[in-house]
Length: 121
Image (tube, rainbow, N blue to C red; front, side):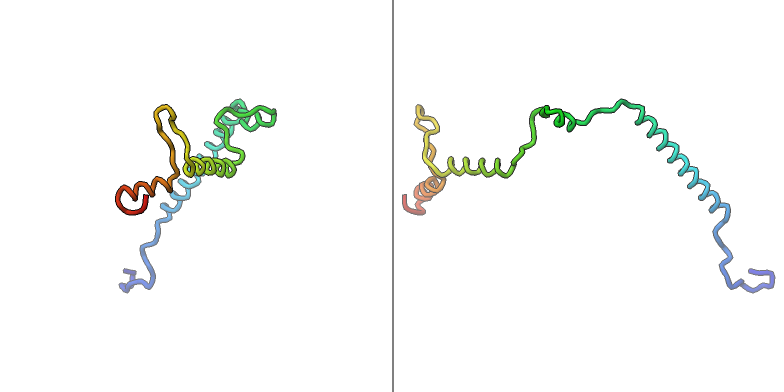
């Protein structure tokens, strides 16, 4: 209430100026602390011995240790699939001494169906 007894036409509870000054001061202290920390960290990192990049070895003609990345992964995958298709689609010996053979997958499925009574042998 005002002196005249009427309610004022504005908000009487504003932000406390002391709180704003304290918040601004805390922000600047935090900012200065972060700058000081960054400066100290930069100095500490600059004083460490430099470690040569592993890629520098390639420039010198030395290969990196195994395992290395595949230079042509798509070609390698196609080659692997071709070899698998060859194994899955042809007849061949697995163990000749024990009489174990490999048959094509399609033929194996036909034999399984015939055993169950679902198709021709």
